[in-house]
Image (cartoon, rainbow, N blue to C red; front, side, top):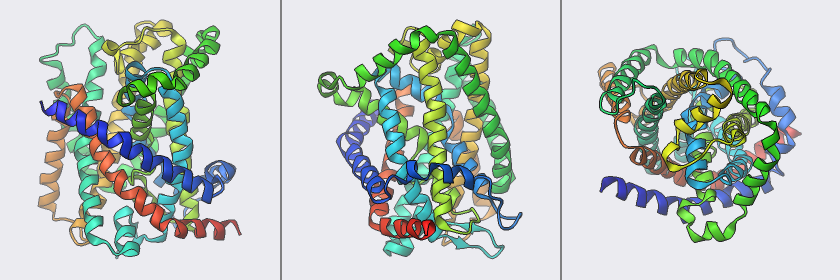
Length: 443
């Protein structure tokens, strides 16, 4: 019954509410910035090479990698697979649209985070949506509500789902037992996460900056090999994607379960453009102009969706592997990769999922720390509180491994949707500030 209630809330929140809000804001920002996410793409790439003004500070690249660590995760594998199996191949097209339009929202929110960031006594920068909502809109209560949603999303919703997705990859092995295996995997993941949380924010930055590029490149290369082995299927695959994406009769016949809604939901879950998460990392970067970090963050959205999500989608569809509700999630991807790599394929996916899940969990809790500080009157909570909170986070990770799939996805969708419904309207109100910053930077 709880699962059915969550599914109902999830469906109503995304159609029609969030679909309208995201479409209007994305198109609005794209028009006002004259397509900044496409027009200044070469400049975004160039900015990644700029070192921080002070080696002690977080660079643009490091801040982007932290946000990418949260974006790049189990959603790039399991989320894409679920969207295709449950919504249809057309979901891939709507993910692409969500990415390109949403990248403008990513630019606005991260630029605003830089404009309204603050500096701590030790010289480190911090900020995010809560800070620009409080300072620019003079709405401290709304800022506090946003923080509550952020904590619910990244400490609960996303971590439940991340843990579930990881344990689901072990279903491909003969030793998997539905009654015991999820408990064992959940316990191991919970212990590892709890241990690493003791390292603090700087350790997270260092760890993710090392792991994210390696695991991302390896996954794309393996996907490319599978696609090349099935190159003769590529033309038919693209026909299938576009035909299904524009089958409006089918879409309107069941909107909530259509390829459009699944593409938008899983696209948003994966790249988080406009959700209000990445600005928390963006604010920590030491850059000479606010627009620089906004431009860099558009790349993070592209890396996540146009590179990693597309790699998963094309690999699965090109392989010709049967798709159905029964194999939605990790099994569909494992079946696809095994067509070329045999038994080694599912093992690689498991390793990738372990790395993706781990960096996602750490990146998620980096954001949570920022929200807790805001709610605690801009002061770090006591050591005792943080230890208890991290213990709670570890328990959530354990619980995620043993809950049903639909409950895990619905919880993540709902909490993330709440963040987005607060952040995007606020960004639209404050949009002129970011656009003025862009014009100044271009001059």
